[in-house]
Image 1 (spheres, helix red, strand yellow):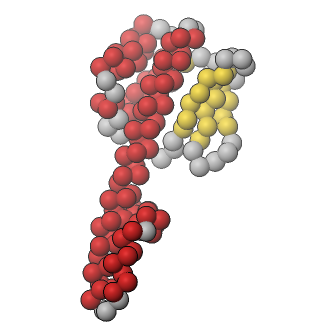
Image 2 (image 1 turned 90 degrees about the vertical axis):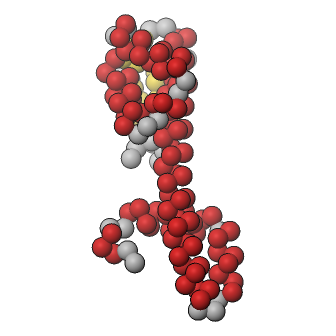
Image 3 (image 1 turned 180 degrees about the vertical axis):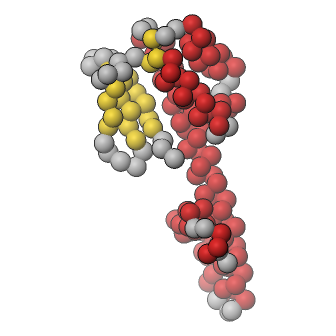
Length: 150
């Protein structure tokens, strides 16, 4: 899953999209405007990941009307509004993914704590406070195939 932070630079008149987890920027020099196909892709992705309905009705209507009525967004005000909405979609998608990882990690750590406590390790109860360990177990649980899980 690729997550992007989208911003518009007024002085340089170009849109910049930064990929999360890396420092390289992807410039939209060829695409110096928001167009219909770009917004359609973002809308379909938001619908697929259930982030579309986290937006309020006005924000959804702005994106829908822009897709229906405009081929190229030229207005700076409209660009700014749309970019705020796209950043909101990005945050919802990112939070959903992190919550899934955290929930999977909690399930795994509870199993591990029960086993360790039954073996006599009384300090294992403190493991539930370690968020980094919980995220590690959640990521491991998501990306390891079911064959290898206990």
